[in-house]
View (tube, rainbow, N blue to C red):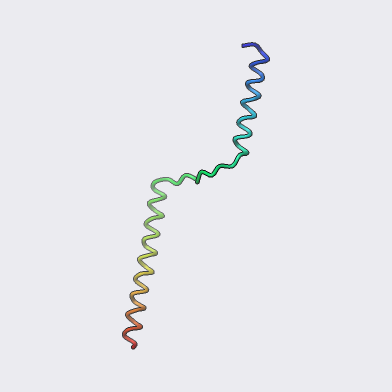
Length: 65
């Protein structure tokens, strides 16, 4: 390879990296398996808490009637 070809290839490579960095992607951010599991347990805890509170409120309203 001659010197000018090497220089142009380096320049093209640098431009390609810069353009790739500037372009936005639709790919979602990676969430680790442990983080997904933690989020799932938090979600189930909140849904259980809301379902328990709704059952308690229904029981209170039926006992008040």
